[in-house]
Amino acid sequence: MSNINEPSKTSGQYHSTKGTIVEAIGNATGAQSWINSGKQEHAEGEGEYKAAEAKGYAEGTVDRIQGKYDSVAGAITGDKAQQASGNLQHDKGEAQQKANS
Image (tube, rainbow, N blue to C red; front, side, top):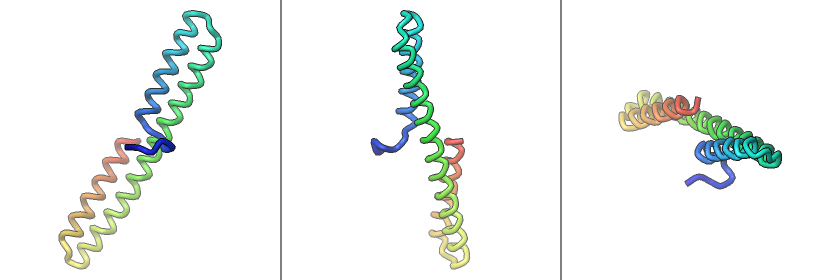
């Protein structure tokens, strides 16, 4: 469950889509307040989505770096479990970066 103050891709996409629908209704009915409200909600939704992507990418970067560190430390000390764990964390971070780029 995400923190209510943190950006969310799901919430951002919802508000972007909802804003587009509200704007379309405003265009169809000529209601300028609906048009403006829809445009604003769409823009805010897009902003939240992009912020969530950036946050996810940054978290992936941290996982990649920490994973690489653990992998190398495990290789140097001969700790195969630490090395394997580091490789997994690195790969998880890489996947998270790809999902958010």
